[in-house]
Length: 238
Ligand SMILES: O=C(O)c1cc(=O)[nH]c(=O)n1[C@@H]1O[C@H](COP(=O)(O)O)[C@@H](O)[C@H]1O
Image 1 (cartoon, protein in one colour):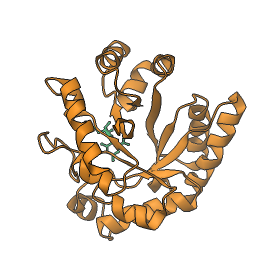
Image 2: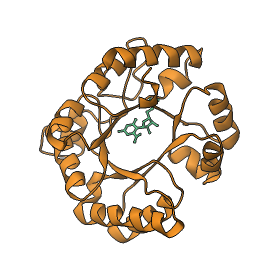
Image 3: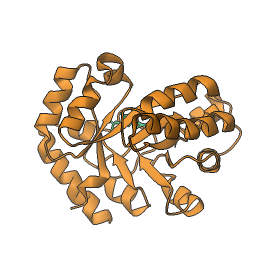
């Protein structure tokens, strides 16, 4: 089984619903806490997950000036989480300051620093959105690669990208650069707002270290069955 590659987001509004979801899926070893839940519960949810020996992806997607982002990264690193996100479009100075800040923040409390990973291009953005709304003059795969390289050169540990770009990023950024892919959809699941998806097997085959898969599992009529089906698919893609 290759189920440790799958991260399930706790995209729920409060602590009670989060605990209910964690209890419903005891097989899941890696959970993501994102903007909705962290804004609602603060670090209380992290304590719950740690007390159950779960790995934690704290997905706060920082995006601000270097001084502000570095301070936020120092604070977040003190929680002892496994993964932490920042937008690559913060720019080089910000990414460099953030990479340094997680080390300082973790050391201050004597914990392991999180792997700091950069959002390249959100998986809800299409090539059309990038060109016409955001006015980025590069092709989407090229822009995603540039953002990953910016992050790598600034000393980050990895990037978040869609499964459609992961093969190219793996080739250019090397084996040690963590690549985390949301926007993963089994053939039987709704795409929702995800615009650049591939199946779990395809994403793993293309070189993803981790897949973030939410609604196909959490909104399924039978989440345990959906989890089992996805684990089988991930094994096929190995
Ligand atoms: O950083 C993320 O995790 C993330 C980046 C991205 O580009 N796209 C993306 O969907 N995500 C997150 O991945 C999860 C995807 O959830 P589902 O679309 O329900 O599978 C959500 O919690 C998003 O916040």
